Length: 250
Image (cartoon, rainbow, N blue to C red):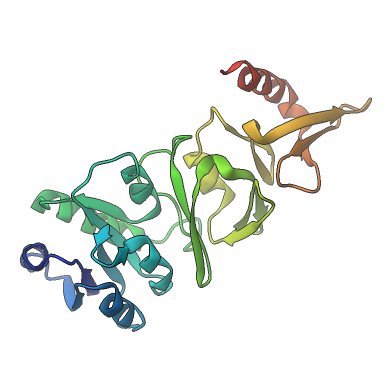
């Protein structure tokens, strides 16, 4: 049984969602909120594992509520606007639904919820559902109680830390995430990102220069990283070609 919160400022929309969720006995609505203040109160509780969150709320931006969602709970965004930002919602939340919510799409989102609970090789790590990321996408990075939305292009280096990953941004800041390097590699656009080493992925557009020595060791100097990033010898040929392609791109 899943326990859901409905956070939606329009009463008819809440009633519609409530009625459609009633067709899914595996989901129980345990709370509803129409305002930012009430939503924060509900999100502080621990009796839920699913949040249906309206993107635009009266009195504030629902993005500001995301860090308040308890760890482990899933978010399904609900919106009336099919805009470029919607891809970010699809990638960083469990799913998104367009108003008016179609019963089939709600059922699909709930199937994703069930699938997300199945055991995987990543031992419960957070992975990216949905289609691959695009360079213009925005991603949601959450570490403990801190969270932020950042343009994908602002990510400079992603490094493996055991089964987790450390994301270094162009401004030099770091975020430690429960996402495997494999998950990142499968989701990132290959036009901009490359796994240059067994333990590191680099945003090629953030490479300022590279050094090569007589032993064919390559060090990449990347914006935001104090230390150069080593590249594997067997990846040099592909790396060289892709860096050249990036430089030719207008």
